[in-house]
Length: 363
Image (tube, rainbow, N blue to C red; front, top):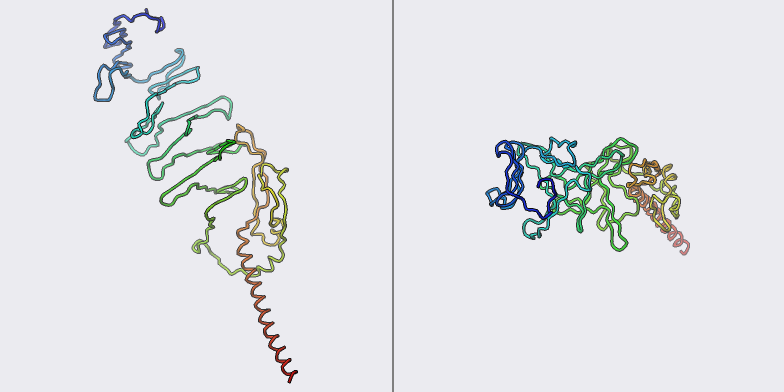
């Protein structure tokens, strides 16, 4: 009764149509299964006993070239794939497993496993390749992962490998994000990006930037904090044109120092610190020690979830290198201390002269 849907309660009869050499439709056999056979194109077969390949009795093995699965015959299988599935439903392929995890081996149970094996040379194979291309720009996820513990976990097994590598390369007006992290919860701590490293020379997070008009290896939009030390490279082998610093006290005496509040309401996207602040005014310092002042850039109303929304531009501002102020202040203190010592020496001499005059007067 070919054409009726299954699970209707009818019994599959034993029958063979065609021949097993050129092509055959086998309906029913001692193990009751449906088989489509062709000698060189498509051969599904039911495994009746465990063999050396690891297949067990009851497994289905498909042998052939390219196999296409589609709703209608207008969809042509992808000739670069052994299996092509075209669907107008929610999922092209839906795979699930109910196997219990063996805590010893393997560590993971996978709904889908993709594997690339090639022993021919240095080739970047892809275990799983996901692509989502839509007619509307800035829509589509190449991969979407959800897990109760981790949405995605990846690791590299070779030296110099990348657990995760992200690339964003466009020529449009929007900003690019190779990796974008977002974490929100009202009851726990949230980490947009968490990096950890151990053994050898370990970098929890390593950022580098070069070749741009303005370069930031790390840019913090908001407060920054650390529990260890913050070291600035100061090795002599990296330096040239080394000269003693002079005249620091005269420079420091020209600097104005202030207390102030940041204009948080006017620039909410800058995430300025709250409360009273202490510091200098960059425009004033630039006229005295211009080497300490540099132009910074901050994105205005940056919105990574804006789906291609062009940026509102970059806000240029005057920034100041407070760390480099330390040696200037140090030298100013040294120069001031030199003046104090000279005054002390002069005072001692004047005291001796005064004592001598008083001694003569008393005599």
